Image (cartoon, rainbow, N blue to C red; front, top):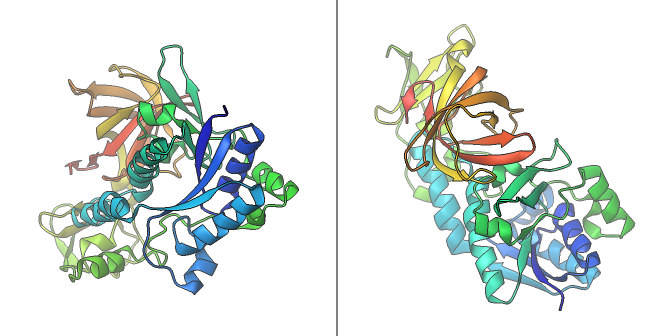
Length: 366
């Protein structure tokens, strides 16, 4: 009997080709679109092509029909609100910059979809992520960078558990984007030329502060822009409008370029400084999740990425808490704009050792 796999389908080219490849490999494939967001008007559906809007289900259904596989829409709105939207709002309100895609991957696309899939008899779930999985001699499952460095998505997947990795397939991880589109074209898939989805699907206008205001029904409190020493420079619109390293959209003219270097939620202050104030040589990460490594020892050399677009910087592990949930690393060279709330992901070559949430930046624990 063939192994059964549920493929999370967004209607885009990556997940469509993932389903195609798995069917060709002999799996019993079921297509599923996760309904996790509530509203999408026709204009947004056409312009954005998001991975979780209402248009995604229609696009995915057409692809499933082309592939002759069963297709279902599963409702995960409650889980998405709790683990992604509520988290997103809370983090910004506390002066941190969240990564909702990481939270969605860990708690919705895997935690919820995986167990619902297993409950209907599936052996695996699969997605169109650019990443690879390997079981090591130790028995642990490791996440590896994809064949396409440009599209690699391991940064956003660092938080998956061993059990989740053991039930996951990434069929397009050995291809680059152009090869994936070519496979789609050769097989006549409707999704072949569909553009990539946006980064944060539930805030299509990228107005995060406006989204938070609409969701909470509360107007954000204004506060002061200050120097590192506390000198008032002007007034800001509310801390959720800002993130570490931001220069544009500050609404203040000081006659020279200035950047957000710190956000102080306790005093409702946003600190402005020079570019050199953003350079950091150390950080602390909390809520660590380990992948290829079961644990890490101080002195370990590795590469760390502090944001999705970061190329990575060599670093050394300088401290680990007794339970392993908190680590401190020191970079070989200063890195710019370490941002509390974002993830730091640790690599040994192609292998993801693990990662955690950045809980310190330039100015101590946040």
